[in-house]
Image (cartoon, rainbow, N blue to C red; front, side, top):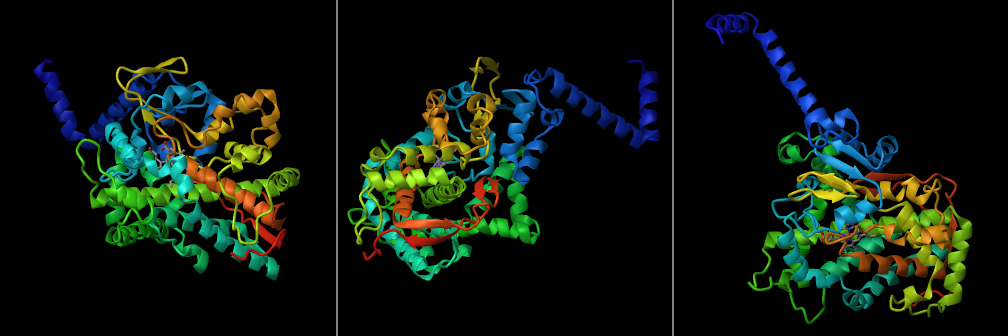
Length: 511
Ligand code: HEM
């Protein structure tokens, strides 16, 4: 370049520094926009322009509790594959289940929003470490382990039965959601820590671990992974508004709960006494090396149990009762089937045994499946990273490093799979030949290596609770005409109360 031109440029820059800076920024921005929308390896995939440029859209829909609805709208507008972040593709067709989740790929950058200093089984992104951990204490969740927990679990059902018998006596109206939650959380406390959290006694909603809020804060951070570290810093250093403080208190309550219980449990570890989950985690050692988990790692696993094992099962039951209450015909068919196929519980029996229960029922199970289809509890996108050298998903070549995900709720509401009545709770759809073949597409627990380890336990409790409550009590659903409001706050959360009055249908529980 001739010296005079350089001189002219330099004198322009010194005369008009602000104009020069603005021009520079404009050129950089234009180049970025042109690259992201035309030259980037994902540029050929459809989606809103804002999504090609930044993660702000993901952040916005997560912060405003609208992830599944937004994904449904994007797929309706752009088709089965949508670019919804600069490096993110979202899929909504059946073939993508196999294509993304059954290949053992690493969990995506989204999980950077969850604790990565000492990740637990859920948030661990290193697949080799994850595999070792799962082998160390995955036996906590086998069907045999679930059966071995039965007598412990039944003790908590006994407390629930006594409480509902008292409600039957008094004729009061109460919110069934709360009592299901108290019981499910205390069951987890018993199984994980050999100590119920006392929620059934205290009946104080403030003491319930704030799992949704805790998950929500992680999902917000994870929706903009490049900023996850900054979110972490802000959390510790910014003056907090009342809302943020409350949100973080949700996490802190869970931390305190876990750490108190670890301390207690470590002091009286005798595995022969009683096989609780935390005891097994503390005692477990890595195959080959014999290494045990550190205190922080045990803490991470304890938190995972509380977060994974309480609100998920509780909310599934809340929406099940809400759906049944709004569809009286199905409710009556469930009761009829339970009455015909299960014996009346003896006065000293708090609940049905899980062994053999599943085989005796049909319509009740179909209702549970339809409930999982219509209102699955995991509502955040669950990305996996495409490994080198790239891969084919649903017949389309995807570059390595791409964050690929599905949203279980959005997929369960894909009209081309489930029909135009996908929003309707219709268990009878499972008796139609076409839908029957779609059973494997109901994926509330996700699929593949990173699917839910707690599904046997959750299924056992869902079936025990449903059959026991419907056999022992007649429910009058007081607000069944109110629309059901379910919010995706990290995971889904039924906000409408399930207000009921109960009458006993059998003897008082005397156990
Ligand atoms: C209805 C109840 C439940 C539902 C719908 C559910 C759903 C899920 C889903 C969708 C995942 C995969 C998440 C992802 O890929 O990011 C998952 C993972 C997990 N869940 Fe559950 N869950 C339930 C109950 C439970 C229970 C009762 C426990 C334990 C006590 C539990 C513990 C876990 C753990 C530890 C993981 C991580 C597994 C891994 O990465 O290997 N969940 N769950």
